Image (cartoon, rainbow, N blue to C red):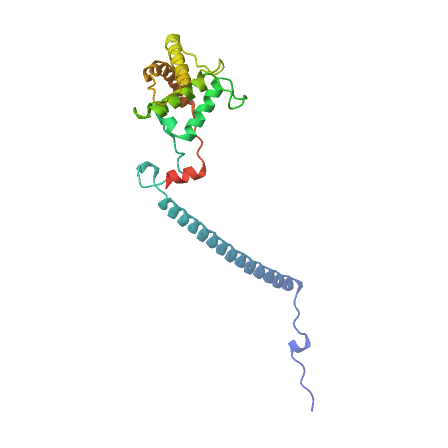
Length: 240
């Protein structure tokens, strides 16, 4: 029995042409490119969404901050500044300065600069600093009760010792007659040294009035240029 002849496709198996191979490869490359492009587009969309979300969060925080901060144009008195204003010390008159030890010391320093006496020892005093001390001593004298003659005499003698015992200590005023009368009376009280002897306080007033006038003029100059320095403790006390 004879074998049947082979069919046509068995004798000549189909072959792929170079053109078919190239077309098939190009198709695969294009497919890979499209897939990569699609993946890249998806990543870009995700990044854009993340950036958008971040910007939205930032704007939300900014809106919340703006809402919390007071409106400067509202003029509301219930809002407190971030940093408190530096307290300003109001200085009215010479008497108020004398009641404050710190201000009194600052004013004395000013008088020493006026006298050009800043480099001298504290016991060496110029014209206006002597006015200052004379004024303080007279205020102490005038504050003594009228019936306390012992205390009055003691302070009058101190006036003589502090301001009339030597030429370098003497105060100078234009009313030389009033100054001479006071000096002689003080010297007399020192010689008498009698606590019960009533001193003549009327002789003090004209000298003191002129001294006060000159001293008060310098106080006005000092007050206009004085720049107080406030310590942290003082600031906290003033703000409490």
